[in-house]
Amino acid sequence: MNFSSKLLENAVNEFSRLPGIGQKSALRLVLHLLNQSEQDVNRFSEAMSELKTKIKYCSECYNIADNQICEICASHKRDKSIICVVEDTRDVMAIENTNQFQGVYHVLGGLISPMDGVGPTDLRIEQLLERLRKGEVEEIILALSATMEGDTTIFYLYKKIKDFNLKISTIARGIAFGGELEYVDEVTLGRSIVTRIPYERNIA
Image (cartoon, rainbow, N blue to C red; front, side, top):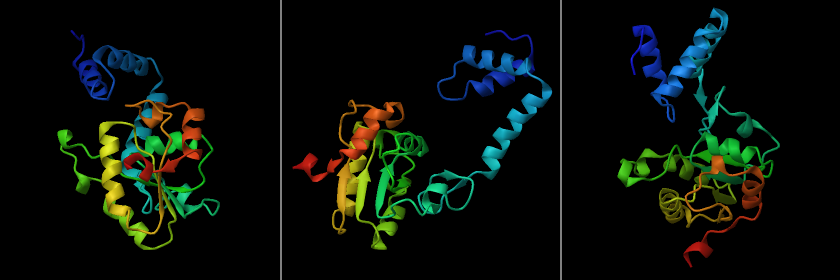
């Protein structure tokens, strides 16, 4: 792609580094910003800068938050005895949109994937075990994607937590194999949370 301006080329190259954004899409976004007022562009730039410099991770569940403790963990309306284990913040948002879960979360920060060089120590598994050692949790819901990496992570977690005195369940598999939670419709995802099943059934 030939550019009439080095500044334009640099901006397009930066946008095209975002996942799912090719050079043509990046060019369209950059040209859109050029047509906006300086105030709008500055607001966009400041929002991105603040996102990077001011964002925090909840010290309890590791969800993205504005404060040390996220709103979910801080809420007295949430059932702290049930922890839903998810891959990342996108899954928290997807489940919250169903309005079917009133417990709290634990964000692993990824899935075990030897092909990508991601092992158990790269995830927040030890932090989850620390929460369980307090003895306040009664149920763990393993709500991970129905992929090979997701199933591998679930099995590893099960071996780590099976000796704790708590219920271990997984979301019902109304979700297609290979499906990621953020792309599942709210009704299906909500139903899969409500009709969750004991994990032992999957390995019997």
